[in-house]
Image (tube, rainbow, N blue to C red; front, side, top):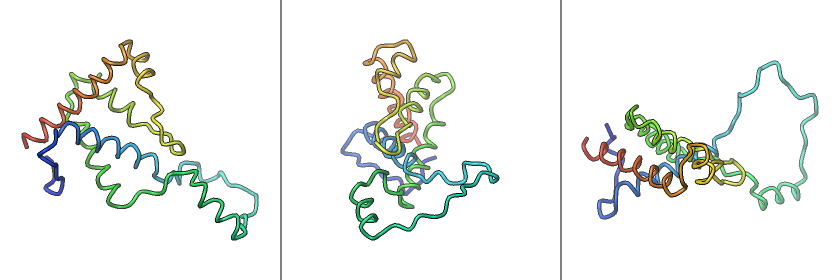
Length: 147
């Protein structure tokens, strides 16, 4: 199931590495350009703005948005997001916790669903939700290791 080019450091816990891959996938997903999300009839009548070189330097210093992901990051994101299907339908709450943590704000890079918000949404304690996230990573790690 797992491609041969997915390499894990076997001196570390695989579930920890799965969690790292999922966190990177969330950041990569947030950094993807959102072009083509509007209807084609929607257009802006304002002329294009030509920036002065000084303005362009200011934008580079500000780095308001995450840089666009590389092809390698997108490949790893695709692999990590594919792992969500390894969580059985009977464990839908685990998958829901993972999915909520995958939503990252594209400018701040912060998770839109904090542990507290997820706990409130699911009617659980925050530490229980963190344990559920860890359990989901362990389920994925076991299924990856068995292939």
